[in-house]
Image (cartoon, rainbow, N blue to C red):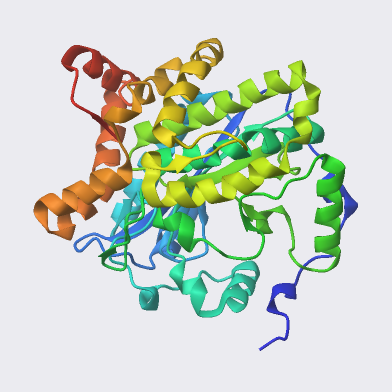
Length: 419
């Protein structure tokens, strides 16, 4: 074995890597990691290559390989808002799902697969993936985990790092809302998001470190690159990271959600947080320097959110009393309502504004499904079928994913809204 596998084929540092290609608008890009499943059993299988080959034959863009051969990444181009995300992602998902079916596979949504065993996983070919596999050893095969990544365009480097500082305290809130990985290798992990705990690919992961200015972040990046600790921005696995090459900040904290409607709600919430954050930075530029204690607390709060979801009792700022993330989320969503209205995202946030006491996360839903039936089949069906029905509904009504669910809430007042 190479004495330092992390240094395999790492390109030399180029100072231009730190040039921030900012965006004048608060744009969005969504990347969704999907599970490749055997049609009959619903088992996780290494079928990505056949699907990717079929996509190449059809000239379909926006679908990529991921670390494991049982994973696919489906991603949008740069979009102006969540409506445009929906308008580009849904047709792409429909085509990818049809391709997968044609070559013998289903696709599923979830932060983990409930039954997948590490011994049955296989790593995708490629220099970068080979480097990761060598570095992680046996643990690499444990990472059959699936997330949702949301890129948000920001104007410049200083505001990018300022937003990372300002919004890091809300990462546990986003994790709790998206939590959708209660099971792993045939057991109930007792976590709302087992994925958040399992994902430890390198020392550069988890809650981002505190950098008061872009200059300090640049110093960190340069030192690590010059010493071949990592090869590019993609090797920073923080839950929220700046992407100078894209001109975005990238939220990586979320589990792959249980439904497409919930995906759109999460994207809308993230975009509104950034819009609000930019306004706060404009009103008080001193906020950009952040406070390292907020990052310290966010590390603990993330762990609690992974374990307990919205029921977690957290302290967001030093000196505050512990509060449930559910209470914090209710207040946050109320505060962001005017921002959502001005940004045109209200319809996508409405499903979250019913009140967290009525909210059922993907993890809670799937745990309930299993406990009611005692059979994994219901959980596997919940991974494969609801999002496909959403795509079918959207063919007939472009508002079917977001608006009818809200109309149904107003008309029927259900006991809870399920994501």
